[in-house]
Image (cartoon, rainbow, N blue to C red; front, side):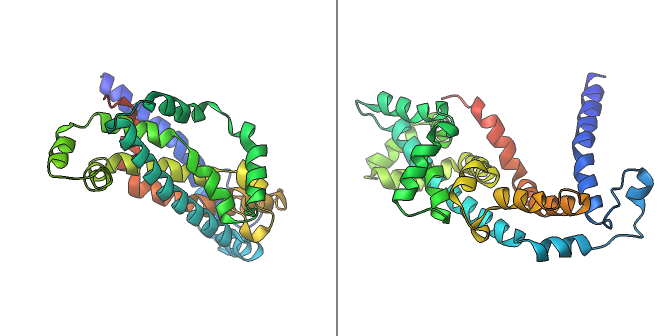
Length: 270
């Protein structure tokens, strides 16, 4: 009986979350002025049109913004995951005198709000002539210590026998990390990579400050700019939102198993 109640509650919550998403896509295919409030309007397929999508694609640079977001998200994710994995290996498997100090220093980055670093980051990017460029967004995003902490926690749970056996065969540290620990922590790295990609995809404040031209905007900053000029057009707003949601939905569908692993990964004990 308890399981039935739990499953019923789960289904109910899923429906509650899915209904707004379905409504967004339904409205995006409706003519301007039809907001599909009633069930009859939902199931009425006689007036479906692609005019809204044509309008959004022609009157905005949403495809360019999406491309910029994908490129920035992919580069940021790959570099940050590799750096986090390499640092996690050093903290997890190497012994040196100042390890505790450096780990606390890295982990303390989680305690500093982004807003407190905006001015020094801006001055740094300005001095490097990286304003209004993808690298101006990417480089400050490479310092997130979340991946270091979680991957290190995952590595702490691995047997040390792998490392000792490889060292007996003459395996050096870099080869040990690349050939043994990276494959063993692949699921953890994929999970962290998903989180980094979503964080990069939803990042608004820093790209809004750094990017000046409409062509170089990312989706998180370009979309509100376009929607501000169409605030009274509900169908246009839902269409643009639907286009923006499609890439993240695809990522979630393809990698949902790893997302679940990433959520549960914090329970791994060393």
